[in-house]
Image (tube, rainbow, N blue to C red; front, side, top):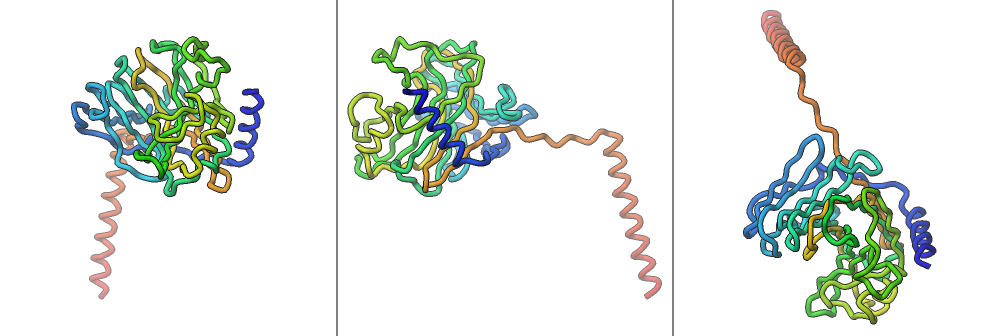
Length: 302
């Protein structure tokens, strides 16, 4: 059944999203400085852009880019974790999003995208993303990067909440802990539909039944809820280190719009060779000399 639903979601997504939006590493905002006891540093090189936050775990020590709409940005980065767009695990081009978490239970890192206007949850048709888990990861083998629907629920005391999709909760078993480890060292595509299992992070949505429920059930139980963004990330309570990433995040909200995002590393402008630079300077000098001569000639004629 899951394969049928996934295939349907993939077909709907493919027919609605014709071209991917390229998100370059240079599109990520610089996140630097102190965030509580965490120290954030953003670096850019020929291999990409990475934001790393060194320090203890906990929300007070996590770094965030300034809020903005229609832009992917780093959020909730802390506890010796990093997020960026690099060439380390190229997918659909020369780059992908890279996540690293080095400290057990403390590391966390997200990449998030906020819409200019919230979209009704009931508009959801399908979504998709590719994920990668490196075999060098030491956290629980069922864990990999998730995809979250960031939401606002006007009727709740805490209106800001999220519905979270994680690959290992899609297994058809009641024992969620003993599920088969996810694939490693290979890209895997998740096609998400109304039958996919989601869970709520903070209890701000009306729960239609179990811990995880089909998205269609969440929609029916929360008719006023709206999606204000997308988020993908790792960590927060993961016992061990994680190395991996995501790419090709896509959504289809029907009349609410659709898009897909391919994460790439922009070419770095080359530094001129010494001989070339010398010729350039000489050229500027020749042009300057000719200009001065023309000005003198014009003065004499007048």
